[in-house]
Image (cartoon, rainbow, N blue to C red):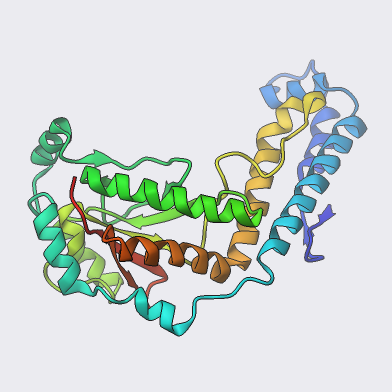
Length: 287
């Protein structure tokens, strides 16, 4: 067990697993590849030392990141109002002008993708795609360009503070009319009738959580226990995401200032939603 920088006890669990697995004989039938790797890595004490050392390094890095955000201001009411300048009607007008036709069948969406009029959003250095129950990760190309620019500026501001490049979490993208109706059953914030999400011009980005950077917050040094590296990387990701969750309001302010800046430049139209913790944004300029 190790303690994180808040003093809370976190069960790493790996050390216990190592001791149990390393005690297995390599002659036993049904041995997993991980068990074999543990046995090959040597004495449980050696492997446990690696895990404890790396976990401590990760916790120290996470504590340092957390301290970066402690003195930072939050979005003021005036700045939040600036992120509510463009409500649904304004965004809907831009969506109709810049987007694809709404409520298309799957084969037509495929044709638009083949023609390059719609592009897929995949996880990247700037964002991750959450599980999309009521939408598809498809957008017009201008949206991906806009999102990349947002991500670049967001990361620049984080780097200037000495913070790692946390990634935005996208929770909703292109919806059909049926998707919109189904969503309305579980989310009262979903617009009645026509939605900007139906045109491939609009997406929602969480402001209450952020994903870990593409690379771990420390370089994992586990040459004597290589099998444990993916587990330690995951532990590093969780440590980073704990910081992001605790400092979500500060990070929201950093991302919000980027959005205000780009909104003033005429690139994006934003609604800072209240009932759902998202920046609802529509691309404001075409190719």
